[in-house]
Image: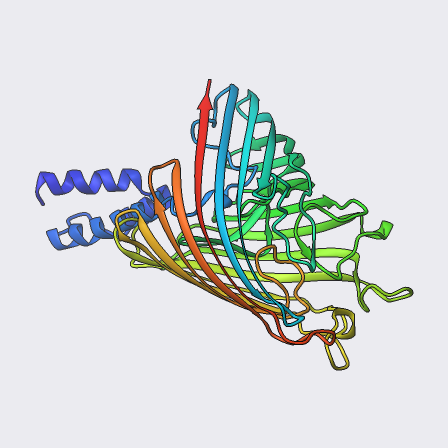
Length: 433
């Protein structure tokens, strides 16, 4: 074996995981030939590429409050950050009453925040968010008529929390924060159950959030959330209602693994539980009130197994709610309960040209699935999106989307059909003292 090949093998082994290196050395390569070394080097180099892959193609919508940047880890002091997002939207709606609505608007959101790291494992953080739309800068909540949650004010504090963290062991946060459990499908950052402040929205979670970092790559998350009487800030679908004192606290549990395994880059299971929050028969006096819970499974991957060059990214997400509102409770014809199944698929072609990517999203959500901030209940969705990563801090994306109701409401003339498009840019800023 040449000295150069021995040096390559040694370097790769030093960078690989200790466990993998030990396994390789234990295979008996006391006198390997050149073919053995080349094969081993290829396998280890592939593993390193997978480990070094980042999610740069995922937009700012993927950032949660508990994410601590590499620059912040192990440092004490102030860290400031900000972002600005602008969006121009055109919407054409064939409404349930038979009318057609053709309108456009422009919205902008600006957020600025800071965190103070007192030690290498403890910090406090806060952020101010401002958002307005083109109609005399009135707050554009960006919510559909059958939702609740979000802010109706121009200015909100959407982060204010304390964070105790040991990067390789656990995180514990208390206060107002951003929680996001999304499928990382290339140009998309989508979720069937939890994604605070997507698009130009201002939403948040008031909670205690704990995370364990296990050696096998799995991360269990537990969120104990407070829900005020008028409902949490998150986007949820009617007929979820939080006027009952029994609905003040809710639970969210997630098991996430983003350690690459063959072609998969993400696996996760979420469980959401909202006690006494479901108005089984809708908003009628004396109607039944039940617990509402849902389970979501998601996975994402890529082909081929690399983090640069033209490649395919894909994801799948499936949700199920066993206890759902009655059909009468959501104004649908027939007896019995609504179905509680939802699924979403994405397929993205990354770096079709350097820094330019496109993706397709297809989703279907039954009338009994009430948790998604991005997919309406009782709807079929098709979306095409293009994204240009201009620089590390600037992205530009364009979307065209069509949404159609699955079942016609009993008081409607027709099923609503909506076609909309937007052009959007996002810019990020960060400064470390």
